[in-house]
Image (cartoon, rainbow, N blue to C red):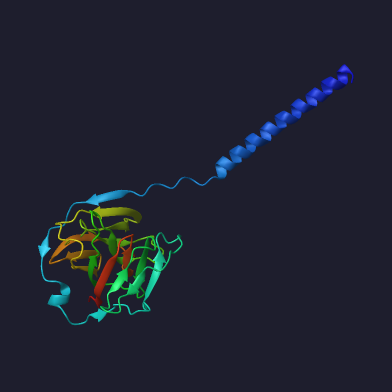
Length: 248
């Protein structure tokens, strides 16, 4: 190869290399421009406790107009849903005890919710529940939902646990979904193995939670309708006397 030929070959190689680097840089820049922006973390807001208001339950003070929604053995009227909504359902963990008629979640099927199939607006949901005691356990977890969307983009939960009795969840505030948590006005949940009673009242733009004789949490909500439901989150829990009532 002559010196002139060698020089030309070297120049050609250098030109190709430079072109390759330019294309690679352009591709990287284009990919950077097309990459979706990182999601903005949801703002979290902690609300101070609402005033504690002792009163009889709505079922006691206004016993007319309630409908039992306690499921039968085939769970008709209720639907399992994964949590989050894009997840895959685990094995079946909901059943009805044939001896008592209680709805039982064995806690072995992963995180999910059991949704009452009728969407409701202004309504009350009466729930009685108890955990199976676990030796040495100091934390239990479940929940009761109200005004919750099918896709879980908005949900409101009454925390079920030894330190539960408060409302929380992602809810629209001035058009922006923010996760709110309200501290309970008092800790009224009884120990595992004992029955507790919750009532969630969804009326207008207000959700109120009644726990064992008193209202312990109350928040403002902008969504007018949604679904009631129950949460499975790793603990064995029983539910009885599930009832709903429209609120005028």
